[in-house]
Length: 328
Ligand code: DAH
Image (cartoon, rainbow, N blue to C red; front, side, top):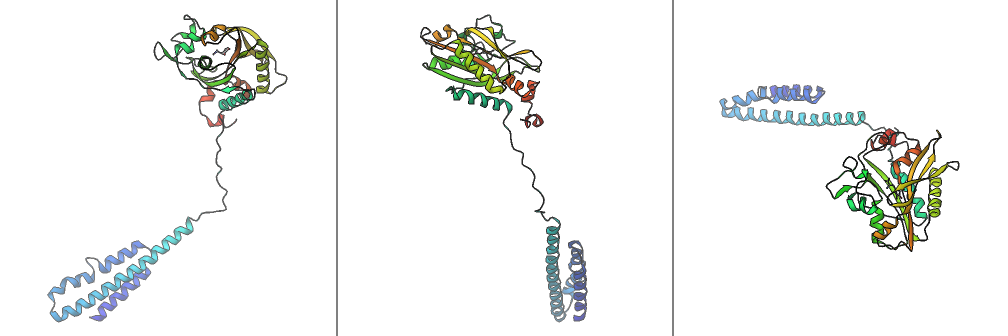
């Protein structure tokens, strides 16, 4: 009887050693230890055998079974190790490959224009202020001397929340906030978003403005001209640039002017509005207009950025197209 089991064990050992993968090993396990295996059949007839036979048969079944189980487990580990090793080899990291380039972020052209303007005026001693974008009608229109019938107040031009509150249409609102809360001498600039119901290739419903103003004793129009002329020369960094001051009208300045610059095609293009702060505004802010005077200016940041970089569609600034943005 012993030799049958020894033969079985030898046969099993041989097949186990010849199995190449886990699948074939499992097949061998089923063949020698599964429900229909020789060993299982022997276990089933164990109860029908005599007491003496039972102990010898049982002993041989157990020994053979345990030996086969151990060899299978041992071999299974061997195969698993081999699989893992092959995986390591095939998935090896090539440390000599050049790395992927990290894309650096860039400053948005609008922000870089704001920084350059701030740099110029901070060097002249101007403070940087911020004002609210959601504004009371008084600060956006009334206090700025803008009459009730002015077209810019219309529903078709301005984003109104209700009769009193709106999205500011200009950064000039900051003039009132600052002049009301400070005593001269006052020198400041303030940039930010403004909103108007416009949308085409030179207008977007939201755009940026820079407001600047100064209130002190004896501020006059030549101070304004000198400051803005030098600013434009600094900004465009072009000694040949032609600039002209043209009389204009703004309700909050008197006299008022606009500055144009000459383009390559010889056309003049307006780039900012300016003027001497209207005495009504100073009075409203409790500043004595017999002693103090001031000048103010406001410019469109998108517009001068477009001129500086030669961009012809304002909407490009807000489309988040990386091909556009990474050029700056
Ligand atoms: N707020 C004006 C606008 O949006 C621009 C402006 C003109 C601002 C003259 C000023 C100024 O401070 O003095 O069109």
